Length: 86
Image 1: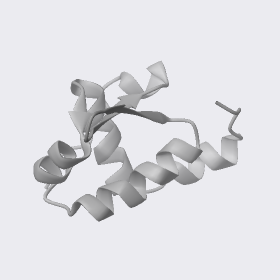
Image 2 (image 1 turned 60 degrees about the horizontal axis):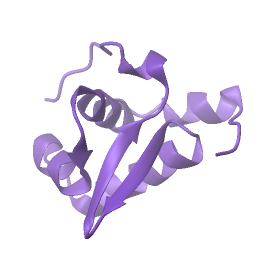
Image 3 (image 1 turned 45 degrees about the horizontal axis):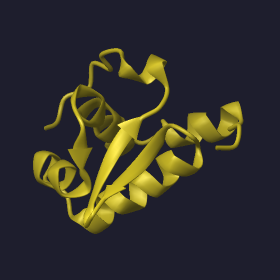
């Protein structure tokens, strides 16, 4: 994994959707499909946002067969974000 710049991380965190994804994925291991159902979004929307979070180094995607689990990498992100799904 490469080191991310502060501006890359800031840009990744500038989206309410990405903050919701981080909040949900930090609670327990979740697949892309689980996140989509929990947040009421399409899997393609979740995948789009995960690509940004992944490129900034905030999450990792673990593949287990056909499932892709989201892992939050930065411990500071694991604290409660105070963000709730609508």
